[in-house]
Amino acid sequence: MEILCLAIYVYWVVLFARILLSWLTMVWSPPPALDPVVRVIYDLTEPVMSLFRRYIPPIGGFDLSPIFIFIILQLISSAICG
Image (cartoon, rainbow, N blue to C red; front, top):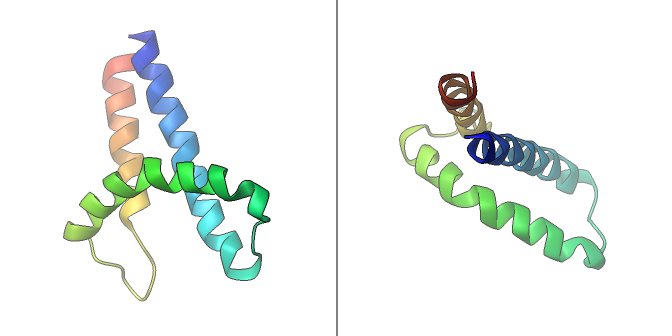
């Protein structure tokens, strides 16, 4: 169970990094050396986010899917990790 709890926490951090990157890339272009890191973050989060985007469209250009993903991760974490 501890591994699953750790995986949920790591995914939470990766999703938070994805949100920060999406905001930062509007005003700052990351150096090419960071491209592999950015690509991994997007590759880990995009399948789940696209699943939620099918049912929760952006409102006024604001993507609400991460909020619902955070809520579900919290619910799963509470049920499994205590």
